Length: 194
Length: 79
Image 1 (cartoon, rainbow over the protein chains, first blue to last red):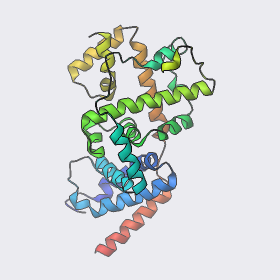
Image 2: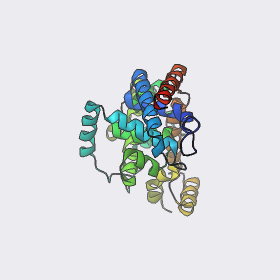
Image 3: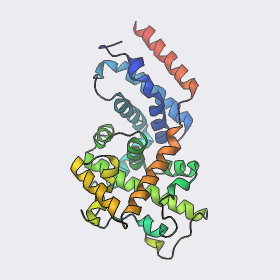
């Protein structure tokens, strides 16, 4: 117990969430377990820095990501992608989802994604570039707000919005391609721009 | 609200990152507009699918035990 807040009570309930995040970052269960163990040990050692009232889950995600980025190769790959990224790209004036025109007439209820097998979705998430994957996982899977995601990723909120937008579009596109490949949907002649 | 603006705001709307007033305007548009409604359904089904596949993922039981043992060691070492 430090500063009136118990580490076991406050931090350990987030073990599953941190494991899921680590799994998506590292891409393997072995890598995720190492990452989680290191994350919680560092969190324990730094528990005196944790401010009660702040969101413990976000704090743990930040530590987890920092541990992950310290691996030199990952860090270098990360920097390259960040440099190539345009922080302003987001929804535009003509931003109808291009998938809709591709699925028009095939999926009137919008059930396309619900029909995909779990494994294909997980593979598509794991194949996203780090920046997009982190944002999508933290927002869509763990329910963090834009501001919380921005704190974990140490970027402005506008960049979070942009990464979410681009990450989701890439993910949707990958799943569409998978569905075409598997014969779930037929590619329309006008789908070249999807 | 026109279609163009509703589609621009769709991401923030679904993320719950929008003011209450704008949220109501966006919702009203999608409820009434037959052209835009399918876009809302597609985005919603996408998010549902992504959340569904990871919902059951949990840390292996052994990991929790190893972690607790490692923390206990730290506690002993630190007094």
